[in-house]
Length: 173
Ligand code: NI
Image 1: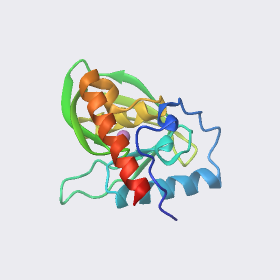
Image 2 (image 1 turned 90 degrees about the horizontal axis):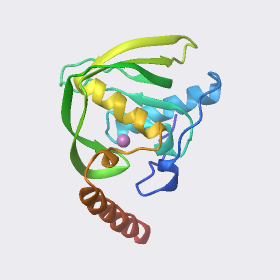
Image 3 (image 1 turned 180 degrees about the horizontal axis):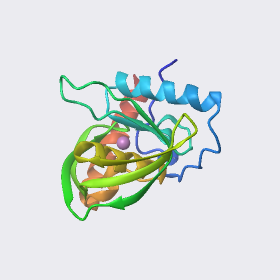
Image 4 (image 1 turned 180 degrees about the vertical axis):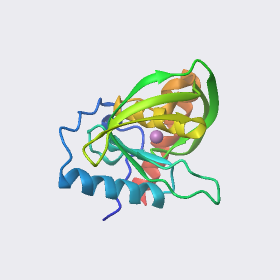
């Protein structure tokens, strides 16, 4: 298991639509392990394939953030939303590819997602609250979208300029 570098916006790989995972292979299992380790290390509650430069439809998440909550590492392959609630929810979202920048994003409060698990079986689950927000944010990544694509152009440009500056500083360091 190893930590993988996380791509920082703007990066063309974060704007691409990822390819479906054809089947569960040892490579996919190793990728999932690395992605979970990278997510927990960051720390974050979700991480998608494109964020580590892998343009495949895979994301990991664990939104069990309450201090006493049991960790619940999840790996979702080829996820799809088959139902969303009309009720909406607004969260101050962040992203490991856009460090230290946050913005309010409104999304359906609940979604039912279907995906292929590492066990090779199809899973279905209804997510609510932070889990639902996280699942939708990660699914966006697989379609080349970031949370800043849900906010005003002015705020998006401001955040993008900060990221360009951050990348320049990191490159120099
Ligand atoms: Ni993200």
